[in-house]
Image (tube, rainbow, N blue to C red; front, side, top):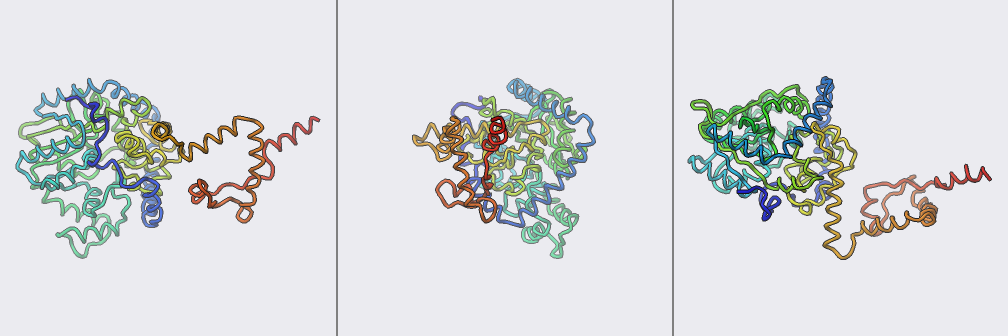
Length: 493
């Protein structure tokens, strides 16, 4: 089967977690009203930023590492078909089975069929954004198969009947008191005297999951990296739950986006330095698990690799947007983004929140299905500075905004309000006399700002939506042009 066939160029609607029920502005406005949420996010992102700055500052060649990571990812995406076929060949040679999934629907069906073939009705899971993207847990549940998250943060989200709000720390929007309440409510075997000390909460989760680890016959994982040269898959994590899932069950099913490839084993030298420092602020990951096919008598005796497209080849076809696939899911861009820090991940409506989600989700679904996300940014550029593989997110956001504007223009006979304003501004600015007259006329706005020194809400069509959340500086008594004329041209006379 060919990946990215024209009939399904983007992720299908009605399945998975790439589209929200609300636009970003609506969801963000509600999130901004939640003071506890903002406090939780502010504390967590500040802590991660501080740790990251310390460990990145230790690396004299950090910028060279970033450049190496960027070039390796671009090279791989430029010859992805070759490396995917090489990966399939190597996995198969080592006793694994490779399945190609064109979209979320096919991937869910493949995994369900594989689980049923084992006779199991429950699975344990390693933290995986790919399976969240396709809505695998929900699909398995609809088929009578229980999926248990084993990552602590994912477990908190699952028990809280919640959704992840961060790439690295899915429960970043919860504080420890809230987590304690979730555990007391949802865990049948928890001590009723449970406190909210982090070590105590972790011990409760460990006890809760122990039986699942020891009894599960099937595990499902994602993959941080797939190595084409050897057919090796890799997962990096901090708790050891991944190691338990990857070694104890009889059957292992890995769902991996096709962009997670690296060509050679030695390429990990670059990424295993970039990823932990950029994500958790650690010099190295506590647990790095690598496996290649099946080894008789050691670990799972049946291994399946599901290679997921789900809109990725459509992203590859866009020369201006394809670098979004270079993302190594470190979440550094989320932790420095002023918009994410205030609105949180749920406002994005996608499993991929923050700056990278604002460019990746619209491309995977088609821009019009996530048209508000490219505008969920101040374009400050902090995300580009933090990205370990140098993804130019700000430029990509502008590109996607333009794509949305052009689509709207093609589908609507009447211009949007914004387009009409921009066209009028262009007409004024294109003529010296018109511009000078407009600048002088703007002085009338001083009347609106005479009390506060700035212009606040203006209850007029078009102006109301903008000024309800923004103050406009009060126009000066003298424009720059008038000042220049008085100081220079007037002096020459």
